[in-house]
Amino acid sequence: MRILLVVDDSESSADVVETVVDRSWPADTLVRVLSIVAPVRAELHSRHDTLELAQKEMTRKAESLTARVTDFLRTEGLSVDSAVAFGDAASQIVNEAQQWQANFVLLGANSYAVEGKEPRGVAQSVVNHAPCKVEIVEQGAAALEKEIHDG
Image (cartoon, rainbow, N blue to C red; front, side, top):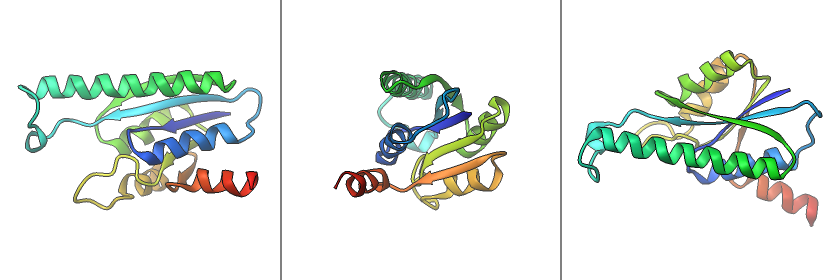
């Protein structure tokens, strides 16, 4: 089984990672941790001298995030690799699911939310276009599930 685990710096991503760890998967399962770097929009550019520096910083953060999640999942006994893609989040997630031949995509309900747009727009687009099963993890859902099972 191939699981595409989509992460960003949102709290919902932490819930998605916890969801993967808490489940039982077939022995041959491979998890790919994917983070997307969106193009820097000029109107959001304020802290960096150039758009190029801003884009490099976003790429560095995405690579660091995928590395941390990958390392954590390996300590939990999962087979994991990682990827960073560039562009529109929904399109890149669907593209990665197709090219990597994912069986399952997991992402947070508010992953890659863009201010001024529908908060769940990326998640809904992935559901509508992915070539495989998609699960949208609600923020706090993994913590609630864990509390119910542990309580």
